[in-house]
Amino acid sequence: MQQRQIKHDLEHTDEVFYPSFLFKEIFVMMLIFILVAVILAIYFPVGLGNPADPTDNLFIPKPEWYFLALYELLRFFPGKLNLLPLQLSPGEHSSCCSSCRL
Image (cartoon, rainbow, N blue to C red; front, side, top):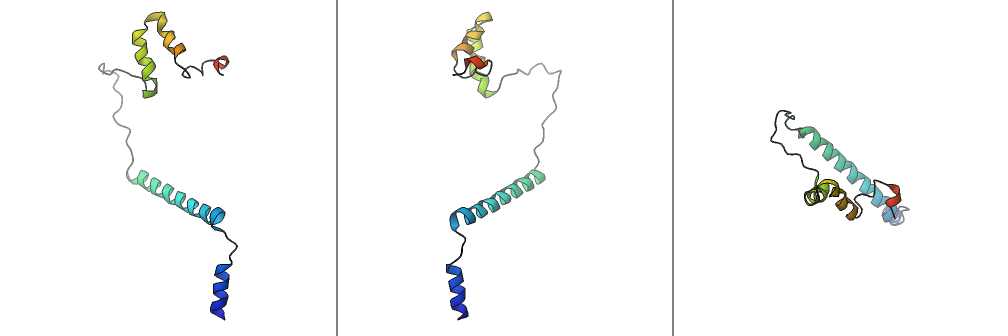
């Protein structure tokens, strides 16, 4: 009788898999991921690198990768014409004025 009652209780639980159990599993996995990331950050910290040397004149500054295309276009349009590539490139100058947005 006791075994039958346990089997009946296991078959008729109110907890469904999708909303409750799956979200619990995702929450536990996120906690484990954060814990592992924190432990790795504590035991293997990333250094800042060498400090900047202001007397070094061999360094050539270049823009980030997402501005390299416009930076290279400056070679082809010298002087006052360097605004032309900015006007021809879609989306890269839309933050300069609100009237340009569609």
